[in-house]
Image (tube, rainbow, N blue to C red; front, side):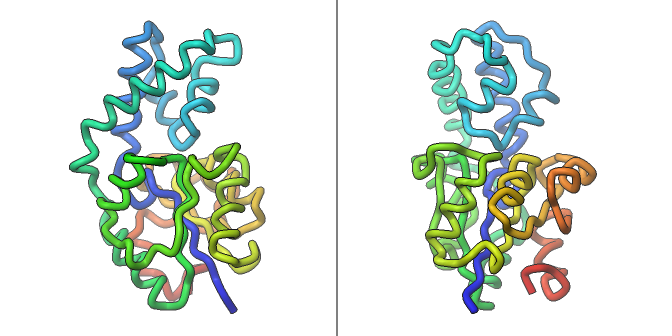
Length: 218
């Protein structure tokens, strides 16, 4: 039986959520928007357009969206050469690949950003495919990124597990019909992940790897 292990990347495998918070906050500040960092943090995991809409509302000046996204990309791009993988992220992916899981990434990142994240994880030999923002019409919390990852893996939802760190991840995975595993290393509270559909929760990739035998990924 073929099985798929689908992973979010930012905040799940690479310790980047707070870099995104800071750079989105600064991009918004430069454009004259005062948005609290805690609000930005809660929006991390959404695609750029959805994140801006979530923070500024539908009545915002939408002509400014592209400028905000470009400013964030420029600010965040300064860190591409030193993005830190979370402990044992690469080891976890390699172990799953060794155990026969088809490992696929499902992320709102694309292009140079995704390349930088994959360099940080340093486990390309274990990653079968990537469903990036460039491949889907709607990002999380829509199920499309997870569904596309399953298509790439050639595995039905009932044979898949999705690991992520945000409520958007858990909602996307739940809507795609997969079992959802949450990690706390992105900074989102356990209760929020559970309410969004997480069926199991671990501290980080190292914790999941240590408890792999008793997890959905056994």
